[in-house]
Length: 209
Image 1 (cartoon, rainbow, N blue to C red):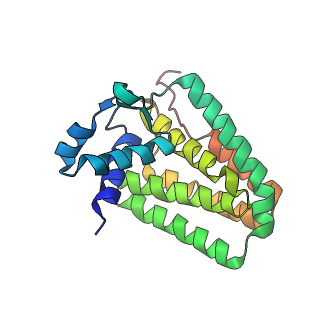
Image 2 (tube, rainbow, N blue to C red):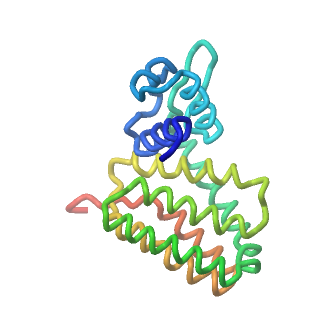
């Protein structure tokens, strides 16, 4: 069982990523504490962690708001994510061991299970662990948190796009080519990651187009 501080953080993070708490929603420590039946100190700590994730903005007396979603900013975040993951690919592929490959394969299997269960949030968490797990093989630890923020923002933006349509099962299976490319080498991995990131949002054409 999670401690109150972990449970509060996890609950708010989940609701923000799934856009149940919409962009620019105002959050008050007292209001959240009453809703989640925990102390204001616990909520304050959770909000500080969410600020580090880039999911909320804290402005002193003006309170805390869920980070807005802006198409132009989202494009810049996606470009930064693409650059980080592609640049890390050469080092990651060279450093990957059979144990690393097996661990990542386990995450892909867990994604399939989450997709079959219709658990979108679990799929998001596993996807994040998969991408960060590959990047950490590159040894660029000072950039871990930057990539994590980019990934979280990418998920929010994808789910906010009303025209995005992709079954969870296909979202999970999209990671299999990345895993295969990791074993082929850095250049193949960079290409696979770039394609994956460039096709995060899938918009179905309107009928008649």
